[in-house]
Image (cartoon, rainbow, N blue to C red; front, side, top):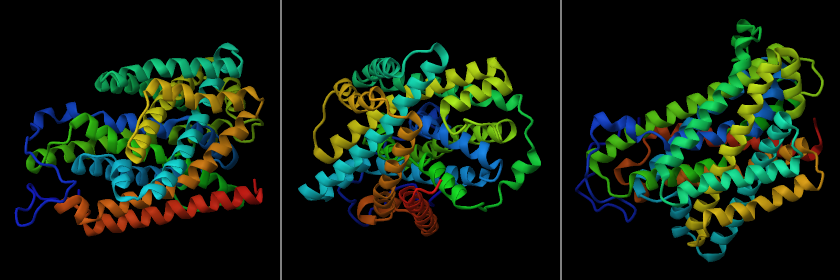
Length: 428
């Protein structure tokens, strides 16, 4: 993908971050290296995505299909660069940044990253609690406690060094999410010609710009960028160069494309379902309203499957989000606390908001705004670091990849700036 060489040049010393041994991964075993990107892709099908995609389809039909296609394409590029940084340097993005910052800038960067992680957790806990309310009528506060408790059990697997099992569990939840959110597609009268016309980039007023920006903010997730670089280094170790590293990068490209293809397909399916069956239906601007509309217009069975998918989304995404927060603290503060303790601490703000009677939909919107503000802090350093020979050696980004990455950053930052401005101005 980058035109990288089979071996690193021997004419110059590798940078401090460069890896040191050459243990090739047999081509036949490349498929067994899949997993990290599927875990990171959970961030792309979390409850925030559900709310944004269903609202876009219900309000504007097929108009914004192109946004999801563009967002998913950019997500593939961004997640690949994150994984590439982790493989080549043997360190996560927060670790590389932490090693290059003085104390107070490092602490400030950590604060904003933790705020973003907390905002992510808020959306995911609320989404899971809403799923329990939809499925079983459980009050939101109790539902949030249940989601937090189950996610702790999932995190115990990772904290005890069982990363592969953790990956399999999360991938299983991704399968449930896929079935839950795509089931309605098979009974919805989708206008495929209209969906094809939706690939043409255009807007229809300020509201569609706001929705497009929120869809992007719900797709390109800062915590997934921080996490992916840690997942690959944790999974594959730090002792690879030459042919071994080349094969790992090849496997990683396929891992990223496959994982994000699943997530992107699910997101597009949600928009198509809403466009085909929920246009003009009142209440679809909230998850619980959309779930009720799905049950009414597509049948109780589809509504039940949707609720199960939403529950799996909340459980998986909140576990992955907590893992990301641990990665951020470890890399920037050179400290860490047990994952289960972190899960307990970060659960408190979400429960306070839910227990305080805050509107769930408003809380989800707030979380997306905070996420949007944090995206530039993740993507700009990532593109800069992976384009520097002092960090990546001869595996630095090729010229065309640098251009694609810069264009991606400009689009992401511009759309998220639009989201912040429109939100502050109160345009709906």
